[in-house]
Image (tube, rainbow, N blue to C red; front, side, top):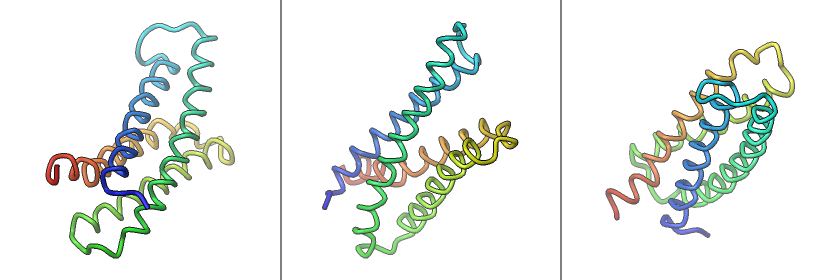
Length: 135
């Protein structure tokens, strides 16, 4: 079983991956910088592959969070659980839209922004709490 410190490190790695995701897709879509089309396609592929790695990391962290759950029933833990469900749901929704419901593709930037926001919030309620309040 992972300790809170180890889970906080994994959550911080996940937050770093999500920042890289944001930069990669913003560059691939031409929102920042000027990038040639072949490089944009590579960045979009990188965004997808990095997304799969992020989902795997989310599942690992979630597994250990579920193992530790009985330890506390505070408001912070309740908010953290809600955010965790939101992150997993948005991750599944993004993959479903990409693979199964392409007509909703225009919603991908919104879904990505919501997922990024939820990841920041869950980091604050977990690793941020560990580093700044317990630390």
